[in-house]
Length: 353
Image 1: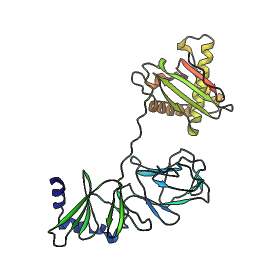
Image 2 (image 1 turned 45 degrees about the vertical axis):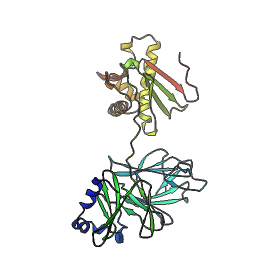
Image 3 (image 1 turned 180 degrees about the vertical axis):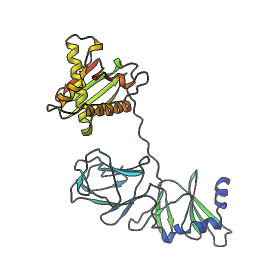
Image 4 (image 1 turned 30 degrees about the horizontal axis):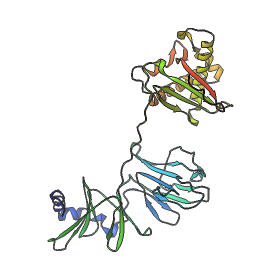
């Protein structure tokens, strides 16, 4: 027996409610409310909010080819952008419409995008629906359509329907004389029979990113800047540490900003080695710097603005401000940091102390 709350919810459904939602009845269950990716053999896969593909048995969609990585592809829904995104986590790569995807870069997907795994002639998928993710009764016969659950009521027929309340989904069967009803509470991943078909409930839970611990300096002096630079200086990464918490800035799109910051860091170290007082270290004239780097002063200001924003994202400036760290004053600029290390990529990090 269901508790009284569930009984009240079921009996609250009137004939008018049934008629209102009849367009989603079982005979028209191909109506799609969520995101769908279709395999090259025509099988459709309802996408979860965070959906993984690969050889690992822990993946949501398991692929068996030996050229597929254990975790090959991730497709996820971005609530803020109201769009689906794809990310390559593989060894052999992913192609979107025959353009190779940058590894670990999240790329927005559009309807009818063609996704190919491992090679241009490998496993192929097509994104055929881009609606926000929803709960689905997945047909265990992959060649038959699934039932996309539309809250609060999804009508299967004149006598059966799904009802959603805060405690989850109920499958309700009404007798034609309306004197008797049977109901079943369905849990995530539970399999039930509907008209000689087996369905598994796929609850679409929202995924939350892990909250990262950010460096939290009491003052600018607490920040340690450690640059790692390749021999050709085309690959730069920056680790910022404070109070035993670290954050890293790197990536292809940030190299021009990091090179500018590296140039200022070298100037600060040079002035320190020559005995300059801390208040006088690292200052560079904006016009001279512009000529040295071959970019306009306005372009330098734009890069500094973007750097400041990026630093605000990864460092918790509670009692200070990023403008005290990257300073602009009377046409001069500097990195106001007292703890700076610059390492070549092939060199190990120095041991503390």
